Image (cartoon, rainbow, N blue to C red; front, top):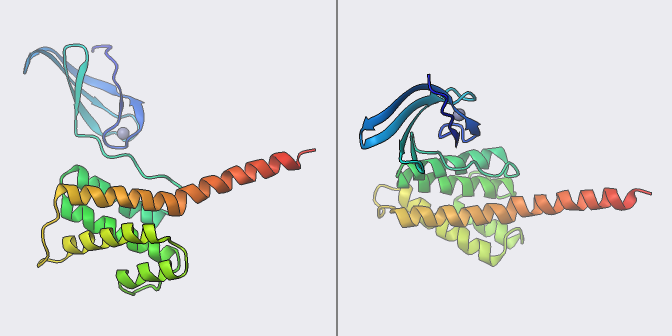
Length: 198
Ligand SMILES: [Zn+2]
C-alpha cells in the first residue's frame, strides 16, 4: 500500500482531516499519467475518491458540502439554513429557496413574532417592535418573495441567482440578529471579568 497522504476538508463531514488510504492507481490513462486514490474519512467513514493530475491539481468526489453555519445561530434555524445551502450546492434551487424562507420564518418566531401567522405579518411585527431595522425588513421581504415563488406551483421558477441572493441576504440577516450580538456579549463578559480583577 502506498504511503501517500491526503489532508483535505472531508466532503461528507467538512472536518479538515488526514484520509485513510485504501487503494491507489498510479499512472492511470484517465487522463494519461494521472493518479487515482480511494480513501475514507476516519471521522465519518465516508468514502472519498481523489484524482491527481500533475502535482498541483487535486479533485475529489463527492463534491464538498458547504460550510456549516455559525453555532451562535439557534439550532433550529441553523439546520434549515444549512439545508438551504446543501440544496444550493446540488443545484436544487427551489428547495434551497424554500429552506431559506423557512430559516427566515423560524428567525421571526424565535424573535417573538406570532406563531402560525403569515410571514408577511411576522416580518412586520418584528419591524414594528423595533427588533429589525428597515434595512433588514427589506432583506427579509426579498427572501419572502423568492421563497414564496419557490413554494407555489403557479409562481415563476427560482433560478440560481435568486436562490444565491437570498442565501446571501439571510446570511447577513442571521449575522446581524444572532452572531454580532453574541460576539459583543462574549467580549463584554471578558472585559467585565478583567476589570473586576484586583
Ligand atoms: Zn468525514
